Length: 288
Image 1 (tube, rainbow, N blue to C red):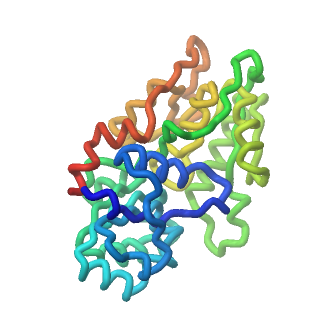
Image 2: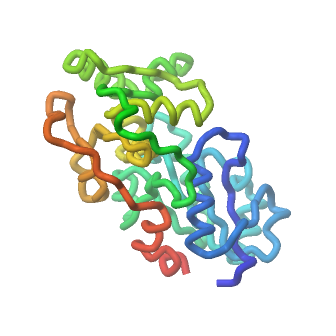
């Protein structure tokens, strides 16, 4: 592969999150290429042979245009997509529409996030929300942590303006409610509005981080952030997730809150990053 033919469609730095930046860093590290060409329009496709789309849902204003797709197909540009949302059987029906548009690319390789989507699309590998080796997360010592459980994220309140409620957030809301009855000390922070650094500080201040399933059957980035910060994730899972995630041995998994046992589990350092995952799945040959 040439060193001048990699383009990327990704959120820019104005979005205060690490998810997209992790993918950009890890891809550049894995391919030993610094500064992938940022694709903002069809005018940026000159001499590009590979386009990496980091979340087709949130970048559709760039790629989901007939002229763009036609040009990519004419030039036989390969398109590699890392998806972060549930596609099929989602309450957000537009996700299926985006998928249909995505499949108009003739040279497409897609990594779905949701394990059910992976089965439907017959994909062996999923898009994991791992951190990059170059992610800059401050690690707090164990003595600084509160001996309690924290959930920090979104619940059904965030969907109040939607005409139809999202059943996945309804399920999360129920999980939090049931969890609170069993563990009254659970601290819940809904709809974080503080900066990413402050979010990490909040996350790092607790020994246990509760991570109920949200919009699909996959592990989100909060799981990996918690591990990097020296916390123990309490991860809700489904049966289909188990064979896809070896990292569950680093957490306290549960199907329902009553299944959880906090006893006799100590933090284990998770030394595995997105670059390692790319190497293990042999990404370079998958997309060649």
